[in-house]
Amino acid sequence: MNIEKEKWKFGKRFVYTITYDEGFAELWEHTIPIHERFGFPGHLAVVVGQIGKLRNVAESSWNGKLHMNANQIKALVARGWGVSSHSMTHGARRSMYTNTYNEVVESRIRLEELVGIPITSFIVPYDNENHPPVIDIARNGGYLCVYTLTDALNDYQTDLFNLRRSPLVEEGFYPFYSHIDHYYRLHEAYEKRGWIVDYTHLTNPVVHSPQKEISQQSLIRRFEKILQVGGDEVWTANGDEVVDYMLVNQGTVIEDLGQTDSVHQWRLKVSVSGLVTRRQLTLSLDCQGHTVPSKPTILVDPPNAIIHQETRRHKYMFTVNTVNGMKISVPTS
Image 1: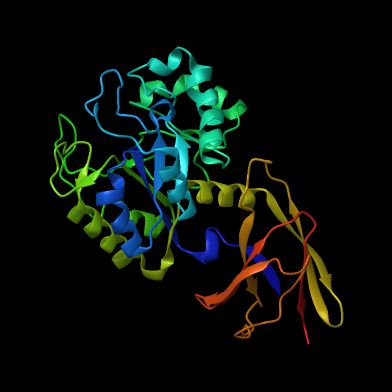
Image 2: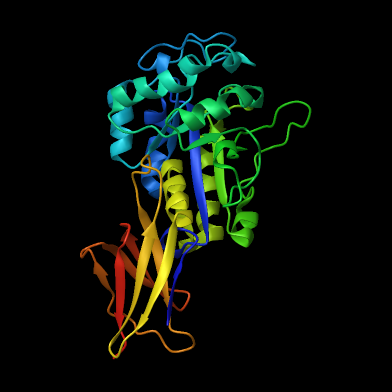
């Protein structure tokens, strides 16, 4: 008999996250209802200095649009959405090389004050030229991860301070002008058991900036394809949930304490950053060739730590709120 860590929460095969840069208020009208219909959480990248204001950012084609206020952001958090700092001012190409502490760390502190939750992720503004000066300051300034505009899947080998996001737009930028592919990276994620992070800005009935946004119908079709390819094997989550899970997974060692006449017992050794607020981990019970009971008895100490149990792919899985030193016992008779 053995207990193993599952790669993704609830034993899902792959993960899907979608981020919305800037955090515009009109997401409430045109985008959030679609998320509610499918039960998918989203993730906001908030320009902290623009919260509740009409946009006024150098070199921005979005100037004049209204950003969400703090109460609107908090309402999305209550619905399961994630929130990242997208810097204090957004700036332009290479703008993160000046006043970097304010853009990265002070923006996090201010955003935490406004929405009342820890902010542990930073999403690089403008383009990847702004990424290099952010890395060390973010790593030492209260963050667990940084997202870039590199188009690729994420996995446990991906540097959390160089996470990848793939563009979800109607039309690619010069010189390619590629059109939206609603299956984009889904089969790759399924095969490789990876994590897709899409990014866009807005979804609207009429698309005004095809290289920065998508139509409502395109978002609906994207979500339909995610379910078509993934079924119940896809974990749709905000990015903060996923990073927390990855860190708990990496920071947990299962110690086999052996078997007595009546019980097999294990101990979890958990070592994770104090910034990790969600400490959940999915474990699976392998009876080494023997049939797993439909609902085996799982005992945990401290008690009441199990939050979810199910059988999936002929394995019995249970998700726990991990505590360092937690003991797990399974009766053997």
